[in-house]
Structure formats: structure tokens, C-alpha cells
Amino acid sequence: MPVAEFYLKIKIANITKNLKQNESLNKELCLDPKTHSDLFNIKMFIRALEDIAEKEQEKLFEEEKAKAESEK
Image (tube, rainbow, N blue to C red; front, top):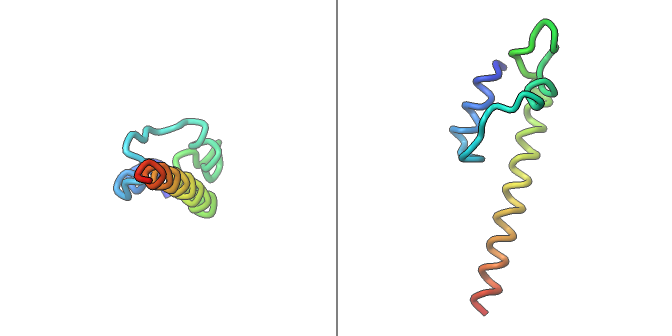
């Protein structure tokens, strides 16, 4: 998967609103740093999306919990 497409998919999914390309993440997820630095390994890509979604879910849960406690 091309790097630009990865970030576009995340933006479209609206997982994180202020997302910018991250070179260290690009290097970690790329298929091969020397020959295919602009393509991502799809298994690693999916794991990265799962990690992002998990953090977002935790954040939403904490916000809901704080809201429920403030209403009591």
C-alpha cells in the first residue's frame, strides 16, 4: 500500500483529525526501507490501525466516564 494512501485512509476514517505523516512510522511500516520505502507492509499497517483505534477507544471511554461522574 502506498504511504500517501495509508494516511489518506486514516484521514477519511476520521480516526485522528490532525494527522500528519510521521517519518519514523513510515520507516517502521515500510515494506523495505531501501527498495520500497513508499509502500507499507499490510500486516504491520493493520496492526498500526488497531493500535490507533484502541487508543482512541480508551480516550473516548475516559471522556464518557468523566462526564458520567460529573453528572452525579
